[in-house]
Image 1 (cartoon, helix red, strand yellow):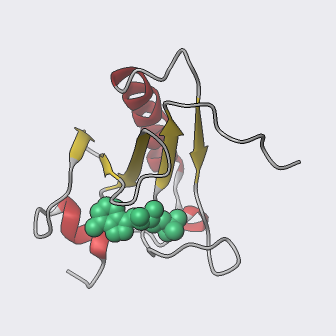
Image 2: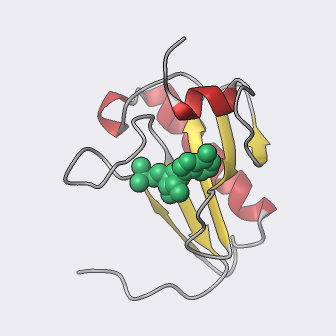
Length: 111
Ligand code: AMP
């Protein structure tokens, strides 16, 4: 298909620690976790970043965030979702992904 790392994880060509999958969304543990729970939630359809995200995919990602937060036991305690976009957003993998971080109190958010 292409040379995209996350497309290869979704296709099973590269190992990933899967935590969730549905028709549109795939989610796996970040290889370099920044919190006790650090899951990457990605659309199965390749799109570079959130600028390319259509409404159906956005809804599917939101549903997956809720399901995974409950599954990982952080829905009540709280969690953070982040999507880095582009060069100045420090996006290193050019396949849209949502970081879900939880399991401990995170630093105060930036203003
Ligand atoms: P970003 O910097 O927002 O593009 O996030 C990319 C994330 O992908 C980083 O947090 C990496 O630790 C993570 N990552 C890179 N390679 C892998 C991999 N093979 N499996 C799981 N997570 C990965």
